[in-house]
Amino acid sequence: MNHIHIAQRLDQAAREAKPIAQMAEQEGYSLDEAYKIQLTSIQRRIERGEKITGFKLGFTSKAKMEQMGVHDLIWGVLTDAMQIEDDGEISLNNYIHPRAEPEVAFLVDKPIDKEISLEEIPNYISKMAAAIEVIDSRYENFKFSLEDVVADNCSSIGYCIGEWQDAKASIKDLPIQLKFDEKVVQQGNTKAILENPYQSVVELSRLATEAGLQIKAGYVILAGAATAAEWMQKNTNIQAQLEDVGEVSFKVK
Ligand code: OOG
Image 1 (cartoon, rainbow, N blue to C red):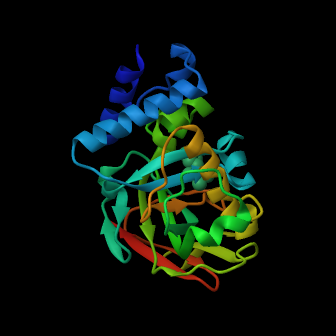
Image 2: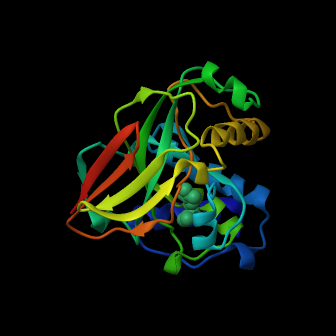
Image 3: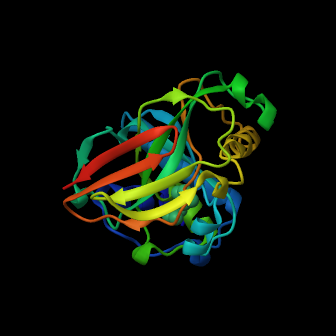
């Protein structure tokens, strides 16, 4: 199977909300090839009229690496079709086996087209918000290798952003919680995200530059979950709270 066929299969699995078997081991593709498959599947979305709205980082915390058994930082692409309105509603029927993660989101002010350092972040990012990412692996049983998950756009399916706030100078130690119907189901701290979630932007600037992609003004960057992910259930209100920054929520029907 060539990478176009693999991208088609993953794209179709997402559209039909039907899981498929893992393919990386059988097809023997490399990590570089997995990113090529990812971009090809994003290209299909763009051809259908979707617009790229940003990037997500994955496996930036130990909690996530341990939960999924994958230990390398990964990145994927967000599109407008993945956006969930704050205080909005989604139907569980459109997903395979979705999970929610509490995250920190950044808004890009100025295009990032080179590798930047932590000190340079304020030149490029001025807003941040509490966020929830919905992940929904296209693979059976939510099981995958590093190459599989990268080809599958890092399990991305949805994201919900709270009200943008001025980016704080230091975000190394902010408690973060995920609540289902007011009950805390996951709690952590931003220091779990690469010791400092701004480091996610630094890593993305390096990886995107290497891949020849620009991080445009207006793009959203999701820094990666601080905690393990939680299975979503019907008729639940899902909320994330990031101390000193804000909160965000949506309903699952
Ligand atoms: C892969 C995506 C990981 C994160 O925040 O670490 C991720 C997965 O667990 O399915 O989004």
